[in-house]
Length: 382
Image (cartoon, rainbow, N blue to C red; front, side, top):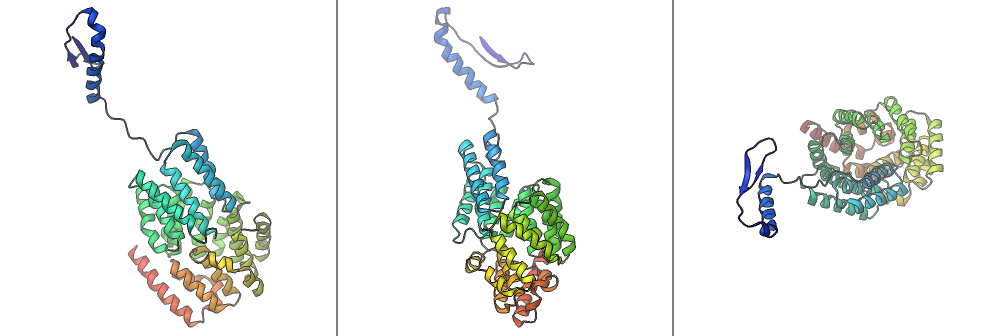
C-alpha cells in the first residue's frame, strides 16, 4: 500500500494498493508515478499566469530606464535612441505592456515636436495600443496610450475618456497623472490639473519635467511670476534638454525678462539648432522685441504644416503671429487651436496678453463665444 499524507498531519490524502513481486517493482514504477502525479494535480494550485506587465529581466529593465530618459529629451535623436532601447527590451522578454506602452509614447511624442507630419509614427503608436489590449483587455497603459494617440492626432476631446479610464485603473501612474493634468489645464479644469500635478511630484520627483507642470497651470491662470520658479527648476535639473530650455525661456518672456530669456534661447540654439523648439523660441523672442519680420520668417511653411494637429505648436504660432501684428492669420491659428481642443476660456479671454492685438476683431469675439460655451460645459460636467 502506498499513501500520500500532509506533512503536518497523519491523515492520508491519497492511497493506492499495488500487488506484485519484488521483481515486478520496476515494471510498476511508471504506473505509480502517473497515479501520484494525477493526484497531485488535484491538490496543487495552478500557477499564476505570466505577467505581461512586470519586468524582471535585468537587461529589459535597463533598456526601459534608458528609453524613458531619452524619451524625455524632446529631440529626434533621443526618441530614436529610446525606440532602439525599447525594441531591445522586447527582444529580450517578448510582448510586455510596459515596454509597448513606452514605445507607443515615443512614437506619439514625435507629433508634438513636428517630427511626424504624415502621421505614420502616430499609427505605430496606435498599433502598440492594440497589441497591449491583446495582452490585457483592461490595461491602464493601453488606455493611456489611446488617449495620447488622440491627443497628438489633434483630437483632445476624444482623449479625455481613455485618459480618465487610465487614471481610474491606475491612479498612481506618473505618466497618466502628467498627461491627464496637462489635458485638464488645456480645457480650463485648472484646480483638477493642479491636484494631479501635486500627486505627480509626490510620486515621481526625479523626472525633471514633473517640476514644471504646476508652472503650466500658473501660466494658464495668468500667474506668470508664480510659474517661473517651476520652469527654472526644470531647466536646472536638465539644462541640455531642448524642452526645458524652451520652457524656461518661455516663462522668462512671459515675465518680461527679455534679456535673460535671450541668453537661454541663445544656448538652446547652440545646443539644438535644428529643433522646432528653437524655431518657436526665436519667433516668440522676436515678437516680444517687436521684430515682426523675424517672427514671420521663423514661422516657416514647414512649421505650419507640422502644427496642424499639434496643440502646442498651433497655440504658440497663434501667439507669434499675434505679436507680429498678423491679425487674420493669428485668428486662423487660434481657430485651429480651439478645433484641436484648447478651450481654456479664462486663459484666452482674460489672462493672455500675447493675443491683445487681436481682441478687437469680431472674429475673436465669435471664437471666444464658442470657447466659453464649451468651457462652461466642461467645467459644469466635471
